[in-house]
Image (cartoon, rainbow, N blue to C red):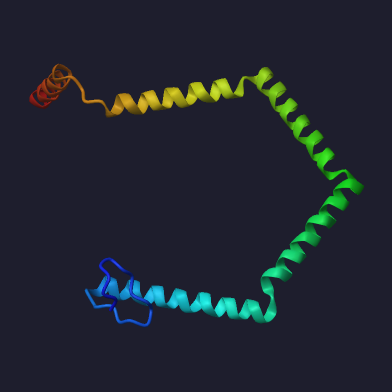
Length: 137
């Protein structure tokens, strides 16, 4: 190992074993390093990265050409504007958001009230009423 304190040993040096997790980490690191090296070699041989960049550039160019020819962006903007306008009109007419908000609020208040501890007086009076009913039977 290297004589410098806190230095990272080169991959060729053996790192002392300190437990299962270290073994797993070391194995994973070695596997990732080997995979990275293999990927670089494959890319150098087949030039995958540069070919992918070229293909992506061609797709982007064709997309722009189609957009200019068919007006896809402009049509999409108009449709989005119409959807927004119609949604606003629907909300103004039916107050759906307001009604939904009130419903959610009421539901949450109901659940909250059911989960709150009851005052002792109320619990005791209910217990007394139950005991009286049992005695009467």
